[in-house]
Image (cartoon, rainbow, N blue to C red; front, side, top):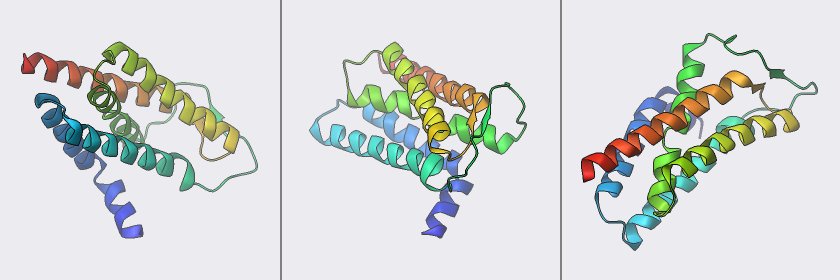
Length: 155
């Protein structure tokens, strides 16, 4: 199991790129039942990976840890990971729910990021960090732009 987790940690950019390619292919094709099932499965995988990376891999601590001052963390790995983690969310949501507007999916993605940070605060797992919220939201925005570009190319 650790080998799989090490691969995910070390290749998260590649995984997101593959996910975006899969989403692009599914968005270019008409979403029939099989494609919806595949997109639903990838969304469930995203939820499981996000839950694992943000909650379950971390041990609870006694004290509440939070950071409300933006731009204090300068780790490029942390920024990259947070942004990459949320890029696939908007395209996956819009591919799965064809009537969902990009703006609504964008708001849902930002709220999902906020929920992650609040659960980390309440559960004492990880750090509730404004930087994480901003970086995750940037990932959501990049995913929305990616989706809009795919839709424009599709026409």
